[in-house]
Length: 411
Ligand code: NDP
Ligand code: PMR
Image (cartoon, rainbow, N blue to C red; front, side, top):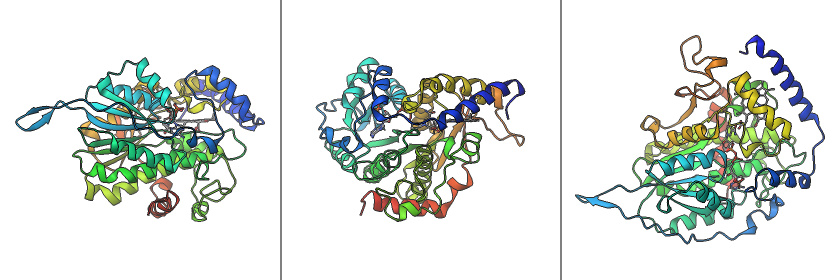
């Protein structure tokens, strides 16, 4: 897959990556100061159990004042209502920017830090009639319920047509698991369970809308049929979902019931995201008309997702992705990709895992049989990607989905 002249750089990165992984891990406190100096908008890390209780969910003061033009009894010119989780950073922020600037969408920026969300909207000059910021702490099932109540109370002239589940945490360095307010391992709780509850609470609203779409962001690293997901350890593996079967709560951290591994917990959560989309499609697409989709945005190697990684990794990683794997994509382009899955008519097909065959300079855009492929790097076209057999495993997906109802407290 890699050209020879890339070998030296590749070997260097592999070696240093492993060295990094073997390093003793730092304490939370030392990370806090590094983080805040990197990104003034990043909230100081708090202990997980207090995350959700910091702020009571607020009813947004902004009222939806955009009034539609009515032509022959039909409302026209009204922006469509879309919720984007994690709209305050990286992919979610750039997707929000794209949707707002298209003039077609009114974005509910669903964020854990309302002030940060507002600062983003201000920085990018979002017009007042194109967005509002609402509190959503995905590490608390109560906060998800509060968010949904607030959304319903939000006086909107339009139905909810689009939901983008994008927020996530990646905690590869922590030797011990951290726990959500409800006692679930943090990456599973934020990336999967909070979104699972959110989607389920909003299905009824969305099915009333024409052309509704629900997008959950997946990843190549959850797919073991790829270099990024198959060759780089730890691999995603939900096993027989033993941990989940046992209730998935503290002290059980991993859904396969094995010992805690932060990087694996992230990858497992991405598998759960992609399986959730497949199950939503199978269970609800026909009866609701909602399009369910997953996608891999490319390796957006400069986002805050890598906030736990050391500085040297954060410097080398984008270069490695750009010049070795061809998997690199910038934040803005990635945001355009996610917005494409929200808006493009070609993405109205349900049950698809979308990817892009960019990064052609190193890996090529098509395989031997002419099918599009690629590491998702910059450029290229969108295509319907194949997930690994493990992600496509129906039995595990069904079991995961049913157990998630229990864990999320959905009766
Ligand atoms: P970022 O860290 O930049 O963005 C993640 C967002 O999630 C932030 O806005 C963050 O809030 C929010 N968030 C984190 N924890 C919570 C929580 N408890 N409750 C509510 N919101 C929360 O990462 P990316 O933009 O890179 O990641 C976005 C998505 O893309 C994720 O689903 C990730 O898995 C996926 N992805 C990323 C890839 C990459 O290479 N970066 C590759 C493949 C997929 P805050 O702004 O307050 O920090
Ligand atoms: Mg990975 C085509 C090869 C490819 C791609 C597309 C990715 C994507 N990665 C690839 C290859 C490799 N990576 C190789 C050969 C190595 C060994 C040097 C490698 C290492 C590596 C590390 C240490 N890669 C990483 C990490 C992370 O910490 C990131 C991670 O796993 O986050 C969960 C990561 C990623 N590689 C990717 C992508 C997209 C990520 C980031 C995040 C994600 O999946 O959401």
